[in-house]
Amino acid sequence: MMTQKLLTNCQFCSVVSKANGEDPIGTASNADIWLVMEIPQPWTEERLETDPVLNQIHDLFHEVQDQGIQVMPIAIAPDQEYSTPGYTRVIHYQRPAKNFAQFDKQEFLVPEHQFGQLVAALLKQSQELHQFEPYRQPRNDTREIMVCTHGNVDVACSRFGYPIYQKLR
Image (tube, rainbow, N blue to C red; front, side, top):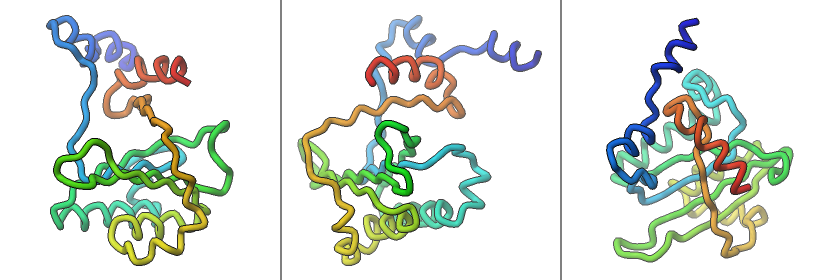
């Protein structure tokens, strides 16, 4: 009953923006590195704190940010059609210079047990990156379009994002 009342009174940010005459085309954070990681759900605070690999990665993000490097982590859910069982996809975008036309992109498909080591190599230990060369995916000009469908932070993402994702897919 309480959930139904909350949903009835819910005002989606994009609906409010549109009613105010704003153009809610989208937003993007300013980051030096974007790290897209295929991580099975649930994406909860509790899991972040108890999963040793995710906890290690979380600490790495803070270490790098303390050095003045802005990292934007993005979790994507595994997809039955595109994911490979036993492997984790990681896409790393890095700003090449202050003024640039596109991010430098590297994509890896690593065994699940090497996920944490790959992230550490990408963020802090570039001299170790050579050991992941067998897992590097061929460079291509594929354009990734990411649509948020997760409703824990903003319910508009699950309400409006998922239908958009389905149409784009």
